Length: 179
Length: 104
Image (cartoon, each protein chain N blue to C red):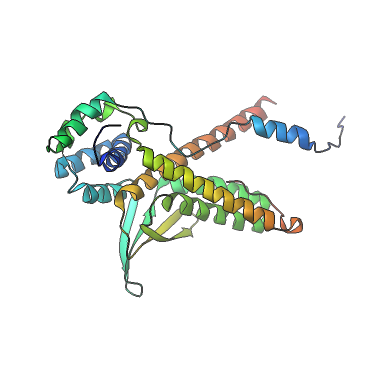
């Protein structure tokens, strides 16, 4: 579309930066001032750093037994979706709660391994307060651009899901009050 | 006076309604060419100059404008593969075991 050999990589980087700018404008400004330039030599490092800025909190670690890096991420969108799913599980009983946990795990796997093999494994830890997702990095493959875009796609999906579920909940409450 | 009525599940009505619900896809829409990106990003890169992030106006383009076609294709392929696996799983599961449906 733009007659540039690496336009796919640059567009991927711009998509992540655009989402970053929309959601965390202050941090975006800091990162832009730190990196200053968008160029092919440094785009991978830039986008890798930006990826972990997209979540509310991130804890990086190293698993010595497997010799891989891990990242434990938490975000308000993940907690919100889990809270909405939990309400459904309380009505259905124990089997329904298990199904909801599996649905959440499948959602994470679906999005975070969609176009990249950077993530080797995804674990989800469910707490009363929320949920944390532990990402195990692949030992052999590092594809920051498609992985970052998968993260953006996941967050966009979570935003849409939470907005839709909240709208349905509000509409149901309004119907009850009207009756 | 409360009146209770038994309703029979009408599969035809259910499938008709289901067909009318708009499908949801996570695959972004087709990107459009942006003159701003052509001039301020790609022309500069073609000339061998880097793009200065602080001078780039991110308000002039949308997420849709910067979704590469190759990424859209991969997302669509991934979605199709998951759907195939899901269908296979449901097809092989005995009816008696399906106590609850979960849609994704």
